Image (cartoon, rainbow, N blue to C red; front, side):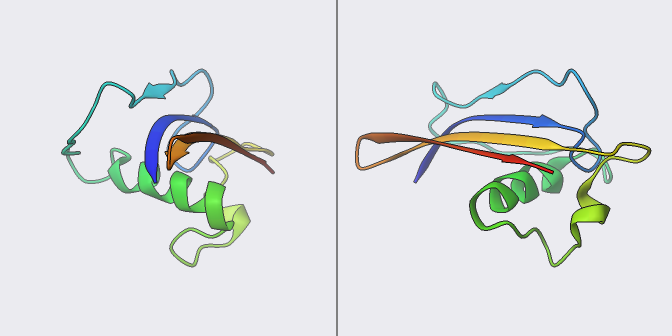
Length: 89
């Protein structure tokens, strides 16, 4: 699986109006930053979109504070076929 783009809204530490993360031109990536700035949340968004689970947290724990809903959209490539997974809560 090759991730192509990731869009999140109200997912964990990410609120509304978060720009889509375009991964198409990236071949190797290193995610770095201070604790609590959303590095692992990006990976959790991918696993939640695909499997509906993220680090054994409940859905309520995944929704951004003071929000009622969340949205994750993942575009990815498998054997040259492009897929899009969209999850809402």
